[in-house]
Image 1 (cartoon, rainbow, N blue to C red):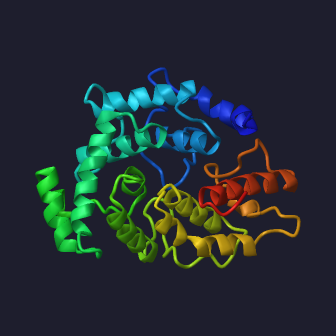
Image 2 (cartoon, one colour):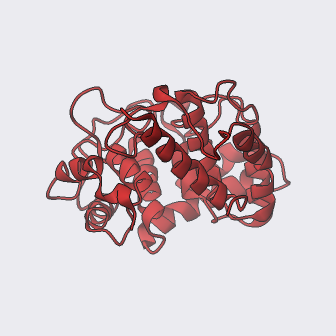
Image 3 (cartoon, one colour):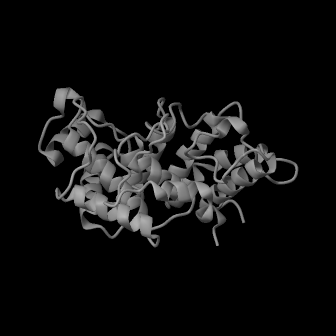
Length: 287
């Protein structure tokens, strides 16, 4: 049994879920809310980290709600952002979150297929070419971006959406591009992923691990091999007793805490060790 699913933190999040399956406003992934409210994707990310899956009723309700929004039967209550195509953007965020819990939703899979076509065209010779991205974007989505602003694919939603949806050669080329991207992965981590954080016990390190967790979902062995330096970094920062400790400043209300309280340092270490061990298993580097 996953004890984190039975925690008070999980219970509080579930208690705030609306009857329609949402938590109110949908989009605000970068940072947790400073109020007592929580957005739908903040709730989903927390519940996912705590171990909830499509087999759990709160996730089933949320996926049903997101499907209804993607199908045009409902709509998220967020105010439209004018800097880019809001309809296209909402289709990405809804599809990405649906596919994080199930790959059997045809509407979400259709969105993933469209983005796979755009990204595959952009990397067709093994390197990224922006002019090809622009051309494919316009052809696939049948429109130019509003205000000239294209939706960047090096961001949480598209990277999540395309997990194991590309052929091996394109996936590996995209993976290299993301790892060397100066701005990291938007909404998750804002620096080049090839450079591990200088301070391990920090919120920055926790967010860096969040980016690596996202990339670890790509099953291509060549991609996983490219993350071996992360394994070395994690093992270098392992405590003498075999545990990991990201420190009290890693508590952000999203990635941590997993337990109800971090007043006890041992509880904090347990949470950090659980998360990092899970990542290393995903990378095939830890038993």
